[in-house]
Image (cartoon, rainbow, N blue to C red; front, side, top):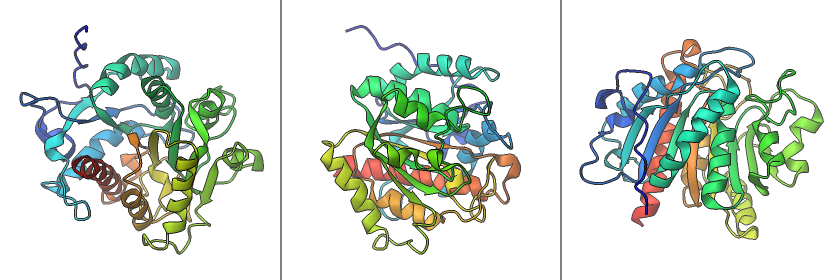
Length: 319
């Protein structure tokens, strides 16, 4: 077999272990680490406040508070099983150029590791889904945390953006419609957009649907509904896309399009912990915009969500 091409160098800041997620070491002399993390510093498609290109750095810095990274629920640490690849080199003025540059780098990364991506705005998710469909040979199940449905057919007159990726993923056949689940949706919008996922056969749990449900027991019906659809479609690979604005601005003010009435950190953590055994193949955490953050609340929430996801995947492998 041909040798795997070398990975792209870190890009965007002076990269040291101190700058990495959980201060993860980059030395792979003992062998390839099973998990990888990379930043996608792009916010050229935001419709309100820019700044998400600085999200990866802020999330990494917030993760340093987690010390040795031993998770209190999963009782494992992803620290020694993770390589932070830095921020991928991407153009920052053209959406199509960014997606093309990202697509060229994805096959080698996905062949080598279970990847987590730090955004960046939500337009980065579409090329990730394209590459994952090729990698796994079938459409993906998606668990999508967001305040916004992201199902618009155009982006304020432009054909694509951070509010169109769900619509494009359905049109391109990248996702299994029955296994597409949206959580936390609550923004304004016409019915056709708000209900698009449900009309295509998926399911939506709006922020209103989730009010008052925080513990694993209270959210059991939501998780059961996701599992039942997975089983009915022969357990397709699952991708997690987590827009930080799924949280109420009280928990995450640092984002481009905050929407009151959102989810709590407890709700998101209960769902991430309870669904960790699903056949996940990757995750992104997007739309963290540090210029609007307060006391690093948003970056801390994002770091905890990524850490919880990685810990759950590692615990599953150990079991």
